[in-house]
Length: 224
Image (cartoon, one colour):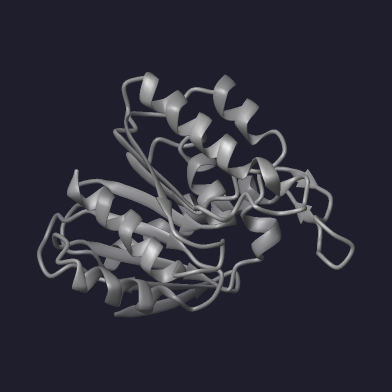
């Protein structure tokens, strides 16, 4: 394991045992990277490198554009995804892959909640990632469905994973209520484009079994 900091974001590399293995990037809300990795080890996944990025400016780094707070007590979303993506592709990835043995077979990007939104937004912005997992992704985000429907994926994206808790759309918040409909429609959109795409429902609300759900999404990417 190797950790370093770039612009106050903490990057941790859990290297593969062998050379030329896939590398998957996981943006995290907290320090749950090791817990996700432990779950992955129980799933007997193929050898790969996991790179986690934590200490993010969550509502800034993961949001594609500005939207108001979801409630009076929440903070606004300040649209810093493009700036963070430049940091990720320009500095974090090159530094992380200095400790990777050989050349990555492919790169994937994954994330939970807002980071799941960011993962799908990212493959419309850069061709560095050929696989993406939006795990309980915030695809309620106003305008994201229309954006994805009108912008081609960059490069060759082969595999897309979407998941959601089956209780996540049961909310009084009018903005959040569309999350299941949006997620299903987006997954179907990519499926009809011929991309290997899956949508899975998990039991529970948004906050249940986040590490386990994250591991399941990454495991699916590795299984293709």
